[in-house]
Image 1 (cartoon, rainbow, N blue to C red):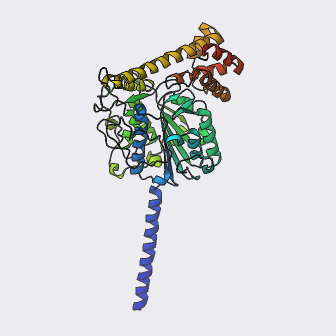
Image 2 (cartoon, one colour):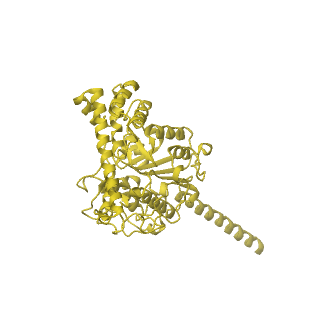
Image 3 (cartoon, rainbow, N blue to C red):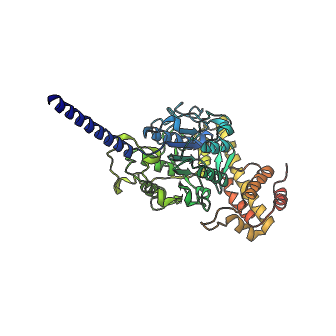
Length: 461
């Protein structure tokens, strides 16, 4: 009898332990996102004057890392010529705000230098190792239950994003790759953040709502984006820095992410924060933060679903008072003028009569001449093809928001290529005229007419 009672008690204890273990296991599964989090971070520029783009990307890595993502699932593209640049007053470090901490430490060097290309970027997204050229070979080897986060920071233009040192990623090529990823059922949901001028043109009229992709951009399809923490602006970074340390849209989502409990903050809430910080109701002039794709289905997801969350922020409560913490009277700088500001800083700081002063003056003269030449070239080409008045309209016309930039992307790529072949590569400033070339394609200008106009305007030396 005694042994029977003991056996019954032992059996009940085992059953109780099994049920409790199952309950705990179930709770763990409920609190963890299904699948794997993947992230692709890309700075599409090089040169110390573009310091801020690599700084933004390094900062993003630190947030993802503290949020629990593993290095094997974070893929970083950056030229990697900033940390040890001769101009860097803190060799081996990169900061993303005045007196900020080093965000360069520990960042993976997956694709650097000449391996930061549109081809590698697109094939990393696809998980196509065989098409890569250089780099570590890491790709987004995702499955149907995985979540993907893509963040890009650089200069942009209508229908394109910059790649170092002079490459381009076209909107249609990105959309084609996203379509392949969708058709392969290689993710559950995807979030894309883009910091660039005219960044809305990468998705406007192009990204379907059915692909489970949510894209947020620093500007609409016709606006510039903005640099911040610049010399002589917010207040000036430490005097030794001649270049901007961050970008407004990027700093807005990065600084928001590093303080909130991202399990409680949704993508919709973060959009509200970033829109207020970046938008016209907070600044005298700025850009409109935009969203594209499947907004309704994805906007209520916690931000942590895509970039994790720092356990140190678990008790942070999101309130209206904490949703916009940038200090008042912030000053920002147009992205396209940041390089000019950098050259001015070098010129102003160089001793009078020194070789550094003379060289800085040459660089300034070269940049301003290049800008005037590009203004002249596009105006002349438009006038030859359409007449003066219609030519002006061709340069300035902006299509309705529901339509993509151009109907024939092959024509658009061809016109950009023809211009650079005849007139030289477009500068960061000059790439804004890509809209004029798209409008010319939409107006039916063919290759022969374009070459005729280019040959008259950009005559060989």
